[in-house]
Amino acid sequence: MDGWMVWDTTASLAKQRDQRRRNGGQTEETGHTPQTANANDKFVNKCLRVIFIALLIDILAFTIILPLFPRILEHYDRVDGANESSAYYQMLSIVRKFKESIGATGSRMDIVIFGGLLGSLFSFLQFVSSPFIGSLSDRYGRKNVLLISMIGNAVSMGLWIVSKSFLVFVLSRVVGGLTEGNVQMSIAMISDITTRETRSRGLALVGIAFSIGFTVGPPLGAYFASVDLIKVFPALEGWPINSYSSPALFAFVLIVIESIYMAIALPETLNFKKKRHSVAPAKSSATSDPSASDAGDSTLRKRSTKKDQGASKESANATTPVAIPTATPNQLSLLHFLFLFFFSGMEFTLTFLTHDRFQFTHVQQGKYLAMLGILSACVQGGYVRRFAHKLVAERDIVVQGMISCAMGLGCIGLLAVPPVQYTGQPIGAAWLYVGGMCLGFTSGTVVTTLTSLASLATGLRKPAGPDHDEDEEIDEGSDRGRVLGTFRSLGQLGRSLGPLAACSAYWLLGSKIAYGVSAVLILLLSVYSDAILPFVPPTGRVLPAKKKN
Image (tube, rainbow, N blue to C red; front, side, top):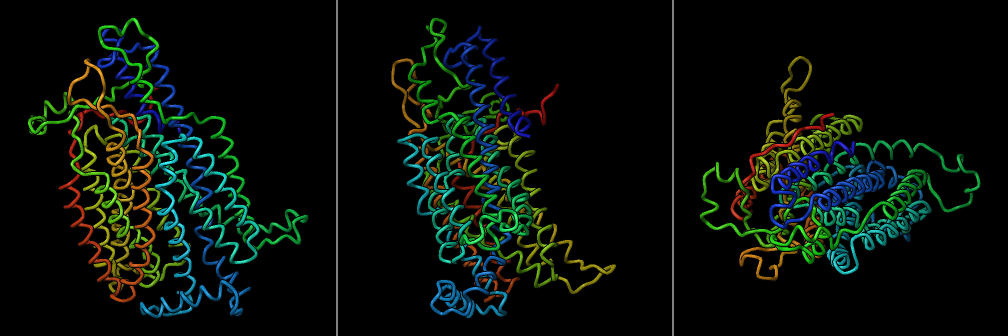
């Protein structure tokens, strides 16, 4: 699968090699030799492959616990629910007060809201730690920081294995939230080795890994939850383990495998472009210096003038003028926060709505959410990776995704109603799936392309020397980890606060009003995005869907 996913990047680099041959064996901008460029093409493809595989393993380990939260909490409720001095009882009291304040009813809601709070805790801790992890990676290297964060992940899973006490289980979530850095480092490393033209396609790998992981991971967690660890390993009897230590052990094994794989196969990417430009020769002397490195593309960027932006479509398709973003990194981070605050919050209430309106079972809810995950993966692999920056500008994809989100929330909240019956099935259920498909499209587009735009606003500096124009800039990624860390930090804050706000709105205002208001707010957010996000004219070239033999 990873070979297919890096094919379109390979195809793009192949086109650039053809251009170099037409220029007499040199790159168009830097004059580097094809031999050096081919070596760097292999480096880029190797990095993408290793990053994708490692990230997929990491997300599988992360998502194993998701379907188990209710049953894990029910386990601790049986053990400590009546013990007023226990940590579980004290936290449950806070949950019940919150439930009463929003008008939710039923003992089952205690577990649902409790699970949501634990999930929000993880995201909030990511909000706290992400900027620091990013800054450290700018200083000490992506790989080094990533491997250290994997130690924290392993400790987190180890604590989960021996979490007979609820307090130890919470501690495992705290350690995991503070040290998780794979997603953030994967985004930074892909940004280090890709260009404006290939950035969205490279970052789509992150979204595809998420979609696959969230589709496959939860069923794996449910399966291993049925395995009695004591029966498999009798020597563990007497250890502080619980009924759900088996999935924890499996997640721990995945983390260990991932860490070893990255330590062996993952190269450092931090100074990839900086080293290349520090030794890049001028055009006139390029053929005498074949040792200069090249990634198969130029990262020298020229600011687009107003005349460039108003040029004809034919001119835009012939060359790709680069517009320096009108949105600052802080504005992009705020946009990321606002979008995930609304989107993740309403996504969290989907299980409430499907149960309240259509009496979905857990199996039906699982199938519904799996449909969203599969569709998201298809959108990222078939649309974003193939068309972003080629036929559709990144800004337009963001706006399309937000409009699709507004349509999806409107369909689900206002049209997916069960009273009218037709051939034994609720007509409203059809709108439920139409809305779900809209949300799947949103999941596959907005965050990936927003991240791409944020990464393009990092690491730029003026090149030195008389051979460069005044308006040229070099992308060397010097502050990329810090900026992307802040960007991800605010996104995780949105994921942390969104579910709490959405649950409150759902139970206080009702599902129709909550979904309707959210649809309007997301629509307004799409207008704001269209106003501040930079527009870079697409090149007009589309890559093949798969490699030809």
